Image (cartoon, rainbow, N blue to C red):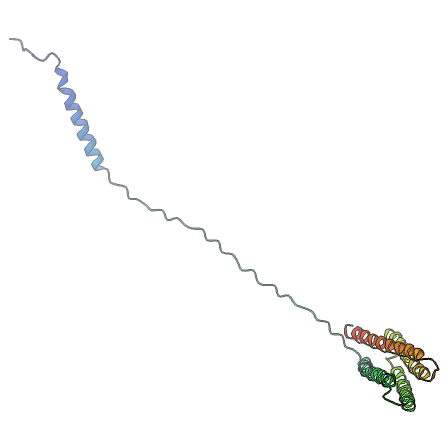
Length: 201
């Protein structure tokens, strides 16, 4: 008796079985794999350390110039004579103003003007001596100019007196006073220049 297969395509039952087997195998295989541990890689931050550069100490070299004692004495004398020039200048101007204002008699004015001549002469002598050290040529030259100006101050004081004695209406005396004041100021300026030059040397 022959077997009768009522299904014209018997392979249709095999395919689902194969698929089920593959799925089961895949599932089992996947489950059997151990999970690999997750390694966290630490990110190393590169820290740049700047080496401190040692501070360079700047050394300031101060050169001290010693001014000779003789020069200092000369400068002190000039400063004193500058003050004397102020006093002499004020005395001469005030005497002239008193005469202009008729606050004194003619004879009194003559005596005051003569006294001014004496003071101006002594002032010129004080400027001339003792002077700077002979070894300092620069100061010797500057001092020579001071002596010339001081002598002009003395001559101006004499001319003021001559102007008082003149027969004009005061023009000669006025010109002499103007020259006197100019020379007094010039002398003080020259003293300041000499003192400054020595101080800055």
